[in-house]
Image (tube, rainbow, N blue to C red; front, side, top):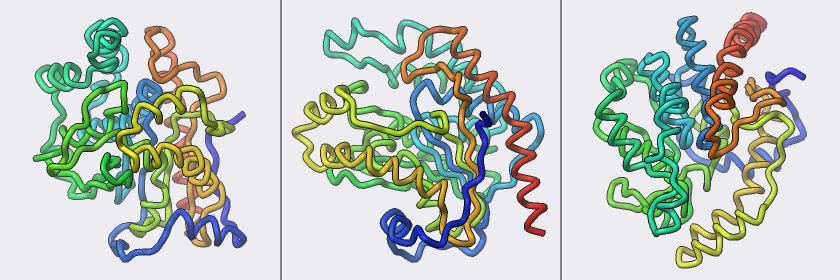
Length: 313
């Protein structure tokens, strides 16, 4: 089964669309196309492989970039035009014992040590911040405000990108701190808005490519882990409420991708059904396979986008 699909236009989805999009005056007349990237921790190896394929083909027709968690870090490397940079994070740095450690976690430390990962990658393979922002196109990173449970769509700059990316990747409990952005504690952007397609539409995009980290027929459901995570966040009631709404919001966003409002075209890129990477995968062969699956799909994704553009003309 193909892992690439186009969202159809539906005239009967007004209620769902209104619930997700809300109202507001954020539209930017210079924005027509957008790239939206889901997170998913190590499942993000798929999108970094895809982006390396895009870079090889010199493909970047987008006006707006919105990323969540690991999806945002992959977007940053794509915008920096650093082929292979994030592939090395997934297939090298993430496999080192300093990054994922159950021993440290059971002794009160982080399970996923973002402090170590950010320090070593900034020192050894730092993002080319000048290249990212020389494009003068908005790069939005999604965060979750711990105190309100709201999604924060943070417009980034060279001054704050690295700390914002870290905050967006800070999964509750697995990373025990709440990084502060502009003085407010933040956590994983995927809690409040894992698939920010609605935000791209609100900002004026009419042609959107969405990069998923789940296969196309995935339906989010509550798990025992979700209930445990919510219990652990009981001292943060609005964050806990956001976590409770997460399943519904995720599935509504998928419905929006499949049935966008009239005049909106969405191309959805998903890993194939045999994608084996999980949130905390530590098998180098599985990670390499996931990266290669993304790299292989790049040409097909580019062709689909270009065909859709040609059809419009």
